[in-house]
Amino acid sequence: MEIIVCEVSKSFKQQQVLNQISLTIEAGRIFCLLGASGSGKTTLLRIMMGAIPADGGSVTIGGIAVPNRQLLALIGYMPQNEALYEELSVWENLKFFSGLQRLNWKTFAAEAEVLLQIVDMAACKNKLVRDCSGGMKKRISLAVALIHKPKLLLLDEPTVGVDPVLRRKIWLYLKQLRNQGTTILVTTHVMDEVSQCDDAALLRNGHIIAKDTVKNLIDQTPDGNIEELFFMDKHPEKEVISC
Image (cartoon, rainbow, N blue to C red):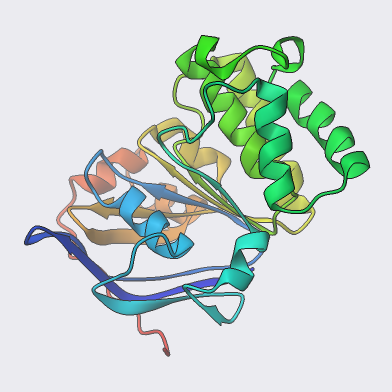
């Protein structure tokens, strides 16, 4: 599902968080929003979800203007802060969220078993979420976002607090989903995760300072370190997009 963001702006209490952000995310790609904490990454994802309104500009997903309830069944969203039911078990959380997507029991059970293996939580599926560590809750949240096989994944720092071995396993699975046609948008402040993506945009103080394929961004720096782009004398880009 293609995402088109056109001159989106957002302020909170007179503080400008996003300033006329424009970008296009092609269908069937892994796109990375890279930036420090407070750069506006989470705000942009929440606007894409329709969770909060933009002050100006527009977002369309698959040709449908946001917000639209029709999109909710097509999107898997993993927030930065876990939105899980602490008094339910891991399995019960997955079952509850699959019910919101109206999955039948057979489809849910098969998919849940696969996802619990991928996020390394199969042995803990009957454990109450309140007794899980922060890293475990992160993994459960990822499984919840994937349970209904969405066509678009919006993942807000999905591998924070995840060990390197499991992180690699998760990225392999995300690439598998990409190869099956899923569009994936990932936010991160970890530079080495950019190399796992197809395209990237660098966000600084509510502005996009660079965006391109990851290969082209790497080629723009003397030693292939994308982090250097944050310190180069670049002006925020303004892509011309038909709204």
